[in-house]
Length: 279
Image (cartoon, rainbow, N blue to C red; front, side, top):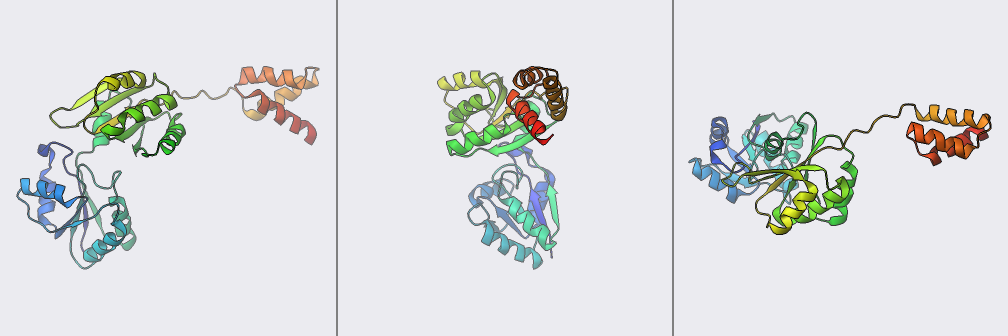
């Protein structure tokens, strides 16, 4: 039994190909590639001749089992994506899981990643972040996902294709607010690399006039952290009950406590009623 190597490849600049990545691609028995035509260009550039098999979203189940059997039979395999690290927003994660389940050793040969390269250059907080990858092409699913992460305080990372950029920016502004900071990173490591730090609202205006070109990574500022209430919900309910016991109407007591404690009046009112019924 041999090894599965995860080999990172350049995301635009061939000068980013590491010596170790070249050595591994030259040494393995075969290469599993997202698109063999793209990988062939890379191999030809570095003078590497190696058998390849295609491994992508629509054949990963059947082809993954075939690759696993070859590795178990003694062959070593390198998996690559068209650009960057395999298994990141990529079907290679299924092959890695198969290998782990079968006890096949997995080794990483790190290389460029668009997500972290863009994050580092964004000028936005890097201490905590969440990688969201590509959003759905279906508008309703895309908006639902944005609604789920709108209150996340971490910096958010999205990939986007140029033909979808305008719709995505509009949906993001609706979900996050037009003033939310965004850095649009385009054509990373290539000749026309660009990093534009602005707001979602300003980005919409810019790309209303400018035709989006190239692959984008969108780095979105996280939501402002919500302040924790000064008192717990149960303490607030207790206070409503106490005020009602002193002659204040339950409705007025709930309204007063809600204003000070940050909870909703209706929730406090209903909880106080249940408390009274239970007592």
